Length: 217
Image 1 (tube, rainbow, N blue to C red):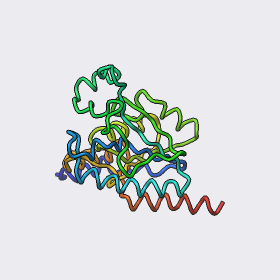
Image 2: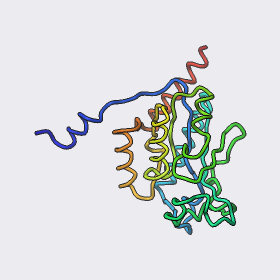
Image 3: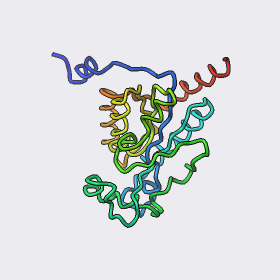
Image 4: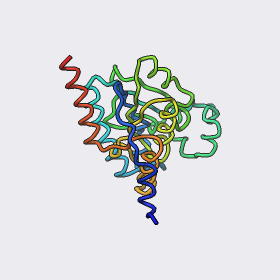
């Protein structure tokens, strides 16, 4: 009789591989996760993820890979009606109300003029946004995901990215959660069913190969 680990390996060891024209999506690196006074404060798990994601971002720009930043935002004065049942259920979403300091991008992540910002009200970067259409129109076949939190908006974005037909890669060190258990469990599950979970070193090598290829053409 096989062990559970062997069973999983037999069922879910397939790799989809990298695409030819990727885009980097940085999900919800908001100040809320870095402010100790905020209920969403994520500590080292989020700080380490941001540091990794910033290195991936620089490599993406060097390779000519577009970078998309997502933000969660709710219109002030509406009481969260634009967040529907999500806002109703998840009370910490008040941290993303328009004008709140916790809704701003984290320190160290200042959007560049050539980076697209996608505003969203729900977990996935794709749900209710133009992201899928934008990527398809620009000819992108794959998505590289980084962001916060692994068990929430990263996972939701991963499932939707795959469902929209994009090869999806999740960078393990560039995603974070306040607790390592949901972080690791969701990386495991995304790698099993929806995406290839890779290391920062792996994605940096891949992006460098794209840069070398572009230089040779």
